[in-house]
Image: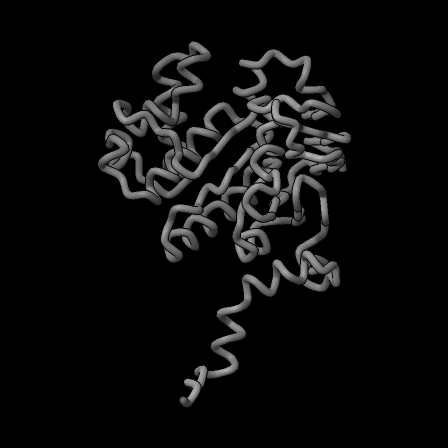
Length: 259
C-alpha cells in the first residue's frame, strides 16, 4: 500500500532553539487512520500542521501523495487537505449550508452545485439539511457544530483529512456519538486520516495505527493491539493513566484510614 503522507526526518525548532519535532520519520498508508497520542507539548499538533504547511519544518521533508509540500502551491495544498479542529472555526455570520460550501465558493463553483454538495454532506454527518442548512452556529449544539466542521472539511473531496482533537470539547456521550459517526463515514469514504488526540480509547476505536510522541520524538508506531501489549515503559505508563478509573472501581471502595 502506498504512503499518502510521509514524514522524512522531520524537525522543527522554535526561534529560541526549542526542538518541538526531533527527526520524525513516519509513513501514513493510503486509506488508513493513524491516531497520534502524547502528552501536551509532545509535538502532536506541530507534526499535524506540517502536512498543510501551517508549520514549515526546519529540517527534513513532508510528502503528500509522493510530492513534497515544500514546493506545493499553498492555496491548492490547503484546499486539497481537509482540516478539522476542536472549535470547528465556523463563521458566525454564515449558515451551515454556506459554511460547508465555502471552499467550493472560493473555487468558483456554481451556487446550485455548492448547495447540493452542502446538503449531501450535512446528511452524511447526520444533520437533516431541511432542518439544519439555514441555521447559524449559535443555533447549533457543540456536537452539531462539530458535524458541520467535518462536513466542510470534506466538501472539496480531499484525499487526506487532518483532525486535531476534533471531539475534545464534547461531553462523553456526544463524543461517543461523533466517534461512531466518523468511523462509519470513514469506512465508506476511504480517506487517509491523521488524528491527534489525548484519548487512548478514541485512538483504539478509530485508529488503524497508533503513534506515540514524547518530547518531539517518535516512541511508537503500532497497531492498536500491539500498542496495548507493548512493554515499552512510556506506552505502559500511558495505558495505565487511562485505565485508572477502571482499576479503582475493580478494587472496590477505598477504606478510610482510622486515626
